[in-house]
Image 1 (cartoon, rainbow, N blue to C red):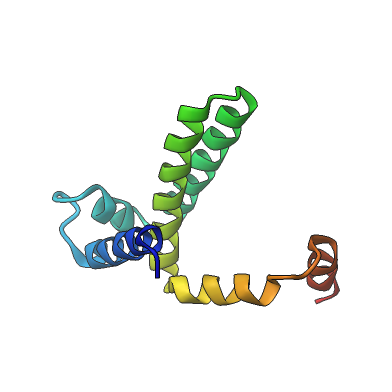
Image 2: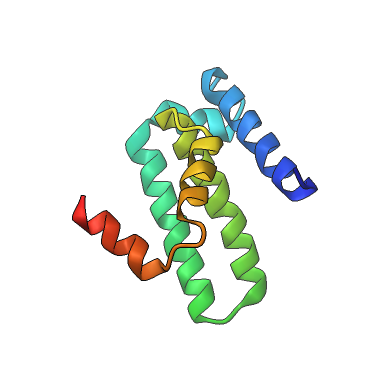
Length: 109
């Protein structure tokens, strides 16, 4: 495991631990308290902000918005009971597949 993946794992652990924290003590806990729809909304907002930063070719904003999107995506995973290992396994299944072949296999399901 690399230092970069350790950062992501620690972030997910911190986010998961805040699931039961006081909403007045943590932004993450506040998101959990507001529920899945609010969390999903935040993921969408951050995705749009990242896309806009990319369209403007603003590298620093791309970096910042990517970090925001990862954070909010992790909150969504924790809320849904999804572990990062499940995502990593799905990515591993797709590794080496042509993107077109992989997409076609999902459309057949």
